[in-house]
Image (cartoon, rainbow, N blue to C red; front, side):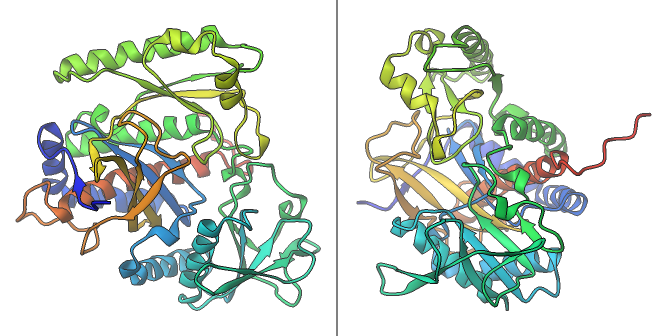
Length: 432
């Protein structure tokens, strides 16, 4: 496959990128103030879509599972960022328990775990892997395709602390998004950092809540930079009371789809955009690209056939879909070898540490690329994308990826506020 990236290098997005470059001092100051006031997540990844006239985040993942897809050149950057994250949480941490997903047969995911554990060990931590699988009752080696191995160990709960046999960690890092709920082993822990916190898992987290917080921060950021917020944020609606199998909530869903399409058409007219508007209906909780459909007319969500209803009714770990977010669709004008591609940006603490392109040879530029058959290509930059080069054009290598890093960090800042505001132990605001 031809690995050259084809992007929309003309039109309004160049103007947006130029604004980012020209306002980089103000942008970095804005981010510094945000992350000083709100502790960033330990790590995260953001799916972006570049439509040529719009650059927006379409998904924020707090349990990233693709560290194996990052360019190895940026391993030192990952280690440096991980060191900052560890020092922010617990400066004297010596041992860390990493709890992965239950994907013991998924070689790609296991490579991610190995890469993540390797990064953490290079920060000076002793890292071991604990499994939530009930059938892991003794240390269990898992062979990787490259000949290396991982050892999964059974969890040991002692009072209000969690660890392994002979291993009492200072911190517990979840690389498991808790779609299936919170296991008893993770409840009521004390005197140990659990990162991310339990309420960041999909059993309680909602994409719509993140969207609300992102929209709030976006308006502050856009005012600082002097851009239309619509250019870097997808509009959205929310619909509850959904039961796809029983066709409950269809009227609400059709109404929200129609209202959002009307809003998008107005913005397209404002910017003289000739593309056909579309929205993406997603389960409000869950990941792995499940429970997602592209819609171009409200009539498409009424009277879904059985296959469509079954596809939308349940997501990962059998989680039933009762709420959906209707998100403005953003085309991708980027491709690799003629296949639709979208950038995925990885961060640790508040630093961009790399990224890759998600590529799909059988999906269109208006479809979900996070689906079976997808491939990954490391982002093709030769220097970190955290610093723009004002001497070069906006679409040149460091500047395009600087723009990606800016928008991804904006989503990360929203996630920081989201986690803070949804903390069940957070003191209620004082009435004034």
